[in-house]
Image (cartoon, rainbow, N blue to C red; front, side, top):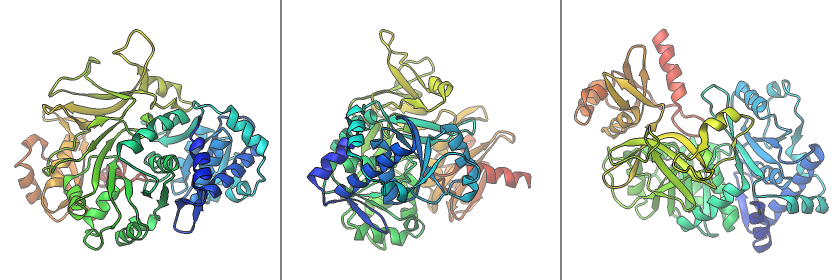
Length: 504
């Protein structure tokens, strides 16, 4: 079985139902199957072999989804590439992944095209290919659940993106559990926010295909003009959103929920960063009867491994628990001796199960470093993914996210989690968002923030909840904090801004 079985099932069961819609058009399940088969035949005519990477230049459109499914149907795997990325990064991804072809579901700049020798195919040419039923049958009958489905390129510590390779099996292991856990049905309409080269979108795409539901791809403009976002959610009858934390914060800090509350929205799931309680409370006050879920998990374990359905109110400086582990996954929090942490101890989050990625494409060194033998199991081989994320086991029996393993600092003799400072800073009256970095040269904590208070007010407020050694030394107020393409606070951009200001 592969995820394509979802598509065949819904095309037979619900042929005329809208599968996906965007700002320009919509496509039914039957139409989606037809175009996917044509694309698969076009891919098979263009490249030789199977299980090879095919890059897709994406936009927020139906064509991108159709290209993904057509590539999968040809028994190859797709590599989404956002054309808004800098030329250098696109070329680096192409060099790392070495795709057999590039499919244009969006425009690729002439600058990039002039520097590559990879075959480039337009979406229109693929969609116009005649379907060869025998080829489709042969590819489908020979397919395996261990075939790669997609590779999402995440940032690498060396500056070279890592292609996280996910098989059909891992998605098919996760999606039925994910949809059952939160009670999604074929009547739901998912409001897609996540870019298609960000694994949050995997939950929108394949949950809908599995259930026979609908995904509406929200236009990019809506996240720039939040009133349009509320109009879109309301008019499209969106019932479920699975969004990055920063996307929810955009709506909360611009007060657009006072302008309009989406009438059909019932389930709100968020991930990617620690959710500021102040921002969350704005949503909960506006839509008190919705289900709110904190999701945790890196790309390497197929979306998420833990979840917490909010069942109580939280104080402004509280953390939301990581919660339960999804079925058929195992999560261990291990200390520096590779033993499970005890109460009050912090350790690294490690995951085992079918959910694990196959590894990093064409990067055996990084794969071997992150995907290791489970140190708690010596009797048989069992892969474990070391996330690099730290969590603390609290007295209440819950695990709480602490920081990235590499996001701890040593300041004034104390080991500090910068995210703890961010939580308290973001909880102060008048502060909307906050992000901290550490200047190792000057041994100073630097706080970037948006909001109305001045430095004196902030320092006074922080000293009421934090020891003096955790109060930032430098405060930089901005109109808004930069976001990366995945909707998270862009810490690299803040670092570059700080270094530029320091050296000017």
